[in-house]
Image (cartoon, rainbow, N blue to C red; front, side, top):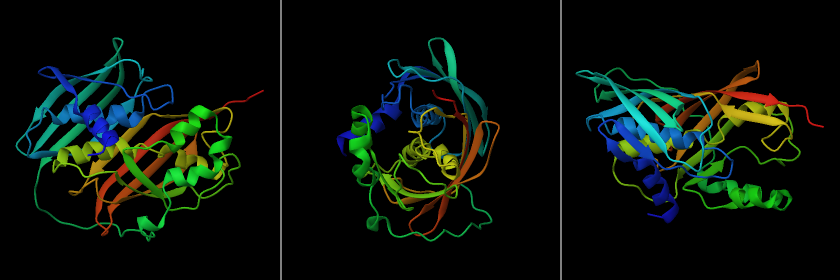
Length: 289
C-alpha cells in the first residue's frame, strides 16, 4: 500500500481507550481546521468497532457543530442505542477540548434480499481519458500562494478525475450546479467492507459543497467567501470497493439563506448505484474592502 494511503487508513483506524471510547489523531490538510471527511470517517469507524462484523452501515446522518483543531486528537464517544435482530443503531459524539464538535447517528443492517431497482448511471467518459485534479490545477499553480500551491499539487490518497472541463479558478464563469468526478484510492486495499465504507464517507466530503457555488461564478479562492459543512447524510445501497473506480454525480437543487444544498449518487464503473449522498452547508460572501 502506498505510504499516503496507509497513513489515511491508520488515521481512520482509531485507538480504543475504553469500551465505547476511541481516540483519533487529526490530519492537517492546510485549511486551518480538521477536514470534515476526516471526522466523518473516524466517527463511522468508531461506530463500526462496536457492531457485529455481519452488520454493515446502510445510513448515517451527521452534524458538524464546531471547527476541529488540527493540532489535537479527537475523542469519539459511542452510544450503543439499539442492538436488534437485523438492525443496529449507534450514536457517536466527537469531542475536543471538552466540547462536542460533531455528532453522528448511524444504522447498520445484516445483509438481506429484497426488491430491487435503481437510477440509471449518467453517461461519463472513462476515467483514464481524463486529467487528475493535480493536472487540471497545474496551469494555474504559479498564481496560487506557495502554501496553497503545494497543497493543490500534492500527492493524495485518492485519485480524483473530474469530468466537466476545467475553468480558471481565478476567473470562474456561471455554470449549472452539476459535477461528475471519478474517484478511487491510489492503491489496493484489504477485503474489509467496513473499511471501504468509511473511506467512501471520508472522500464524499471532498469538493462536495462547492458544487453549490458554480451558478454564482465564485470559488473558494474568491475574497470574502466563507464555505463550511453543516451536516452530511449518506445511504449505502450495495457492496463496492473504493479501490476501484466510482463515479460521484453531484448536483445542487437550491441555495438560500446563506445555505446551499448538494446531493449525489455514487456509481461503480459497471453502472451499479452503491451510495447516495447529501449535504447542506454555510455559504456566505462577506464584503471585502
